[in-house]
Length: 354
Image (tube, rainbow, N blue to C red):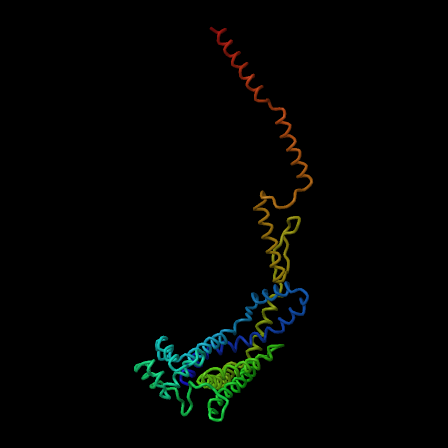
């Protein structure tokens, strides 16, 4: 119980954060529904608008998931410890546990270590001999009882084991109660199939409660009761309705600022500079257009657009000229003959001078 209390106290700041995130999500619901309705037939555009809304307004649909994730990690960790107390609490070697299970003909399943503890407490000589004196002393000194309730016992549907049935039932009832209180105090409105989530989780824990030692159900019952108190205290500190109204006002101010017009200087087609009133979205479009113009000027030599008719004609004319020049150029043999003639004339001129 002390562990559960300390854990809930440590998680209280996360609970407050979740309360704020829930209120923020509720305030964004009208905008989300508007986008879904407007682009119902265009899923791609709907996703783009949702991403745009997240960037512009700071909306995050996963912001309140951390407390739930931490809860699940802790929960599964506790289930593992309750299943295997000899390994994780008493640190008894696995080889001794296996030998004890073999000696006592104890099946290897989720209740194996609980059954070994029960066999030791019942004085089973085969199990005690396999474990050895140090391990047996640790098991006997291990506080597995809460009053008359054996925390490592498995719930059984019988008159003799009625005590083991109380806490599995209480764990489910308190879970349902905590879910209802959390929804009411946080202002959370579940939509569609999400309305049935608390009931599905409760049904799942009915199964879990009867397949783990009763110690888990005790922990979960106490944890649920503390969560109810935690939710009531969180509501006193941060009223979800007031938070929702405050966030809605912030969203409305951002929308007004987005629609408000600003005066900017733009250049007309004739090169004349003009003053123009534009909204935030229009200003973004103008900036994008200007960036494209600058890129086009910067990479003008790197042709990416199709050639115009004039450019294509000029390119063809240039190709013809190059081809014609190549055709009129002297061949290799003609070039050698000319060089020999020039050499002979040069030698003749030299002899005449002598």
